[in-house]
Length: 333
Image 1 (spheres, helix red, strand yellow):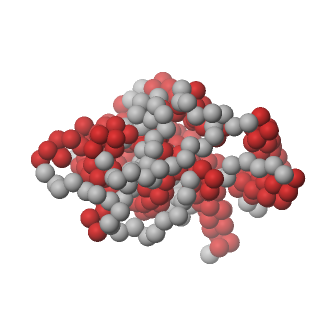
Image 2 (cartoon, helix red, strand yellow; image 1 turned 180 degrees about the vertical axis):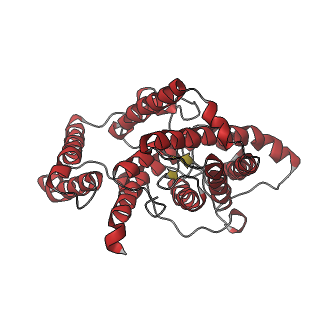
Image 3 (cartoon, one colour; image 1 turned 90 degrees about the vertical axis):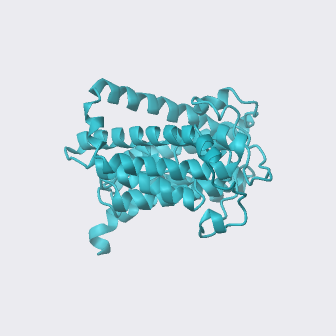
């Protein structure tokens, strides 16, 4: 079994490692604890891989969803966010039951190209966040954590150039650039040496070893995921039985307060997920099910909200990474 599925397992491990720092970062954008983003990552990933309409597609915490949550969290607390994500999941599943997933197929091809280019710019610019000095976390009574400056704006990916956090010193910046260059070199050159493991996973392994066996041994260091935030957590329980959350009683007023955010999150999640499905269909000359994908996304959102997550959707970067690494089955995602 392992011989037949080695590529799928290794590709899945690579994507999982890439998702951890992203989930932490998007938690800060939403203004919640890093554990909330990590809960979303694995819940969304399992729901989409089991029930989604496209094997190999990867879902998790995303900036698209995180960017619409900070205002709700700041105004009403993290409990309202959970209810909004649950409602967004219900909306997406209703969308699937009504078989409206095929609507995305009428979107013009130039829109898909613009979508990819726009995401590429946003993802690229957002990487400059790693060159900022991490801000200390602090708890508040609602259990939420700080949000990155500008996180309430749709353009929050550009926050490295608009927030007040200082840049890292020149020495650390040079060592971080060194890791980036080495990772890219390994990614490009490793397939010429061996195809035993995905080149992106090889890049992660090589730079992790370099950091701890070389950089830190000569008196320097760069930030690790642990330096940015605590990622400790426990297996989740429904939010109503978790003492760490203060939840408002369900009422008509709460429904009205969370509805706009729920609709926005559902629409953005469906748009990004179904456009990603179309892109991967085009790259692989296959056809996925947009209605099943909408259902898988909705189920993931619903369960994410119930178990203390911030929701999410398909991640185009990790999905393409998975496909390029040879991960084309549900096992890989």
